[in-house]
Amino acid sequence: MLKNILLFLSFLSLYPCFSQDNSAFQEGEYLKFRVRYGIFNASYASLLLKNKVYEGKTVYHALGKGETTGLAKLFFKVDDTYESYFDKTTGKPYFFNRDIYEGGYTKKLNFFFNFNTNKLRIKNLENNEEKNISIQPTVKDVVTTLYYLRNNPKMETLKKNDEVSMDMIFDDDEIYQFRLRFLGKEKITTPLGEINTLIFRPLVQDGRVFKEQESLTLWISDDRNKIPVKIKASLRVGSLVGELINFNGLKHPTTLKK
Image 1 (tube, helix red, strand yellow):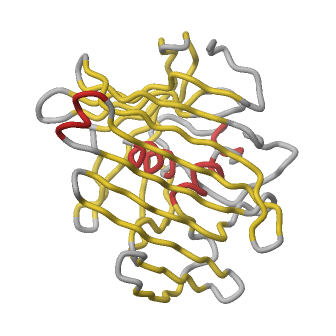
Image 2 (cartoon, helix red, strand yellow):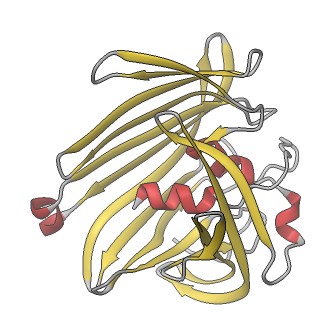
Image 3 (spheres, one colour):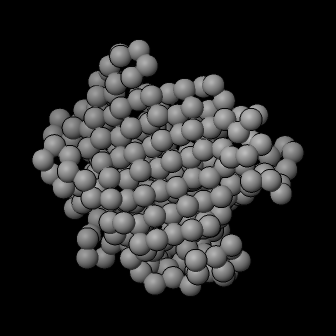
């Protein structure tokens, strides 16, 4: 579910905009989510933002963790880590780490971005193999995009049925193109109280045509923080619901109460 939270948020990026003065977040921000299947708690996911020094420069270090809990852990164990080091001024990534364990499936990849040459070096830690690919200067990893999009002023001017798109690298050498449709606004009740939200739904590519994936819905806080508060994924049997259950260090006021 952590992967889904990051991916769905990443659909929202439009055009470059990264300003410290108007930033939607700050060092020390912490978000925690609970994922439920029906009445059962299935997993927890968290995102923590800190200042770190990377290659002699102070940057943001975003760390995402996700793991199953309780009975779900016995049937399908998940232990995922996603982390990114990105520039505090431009928002461009320097390094991305994907280390996942999902029901026996593993993936351990390091991504090294070089925007001076527009090259990306990808190292597979499981077999020690490396590859280099060419990238566009706007490409980002999934974690960096999450924070980058939240500073985008165009989020304030979206109209119903507007679509947004972006390119993002997530796995090995695949660069994904995503689109997201804005469905409107809604005031919802969460475990932390009521909050006004923006509603989005991803579009998936079927050949050369993008079609709406009605099984996925995302709610983002309609305030200056632009944090995810709810995600719903409808399954063949039942549904998964991810909700924000705790937070710390938000930069701007919120109606949510811990």
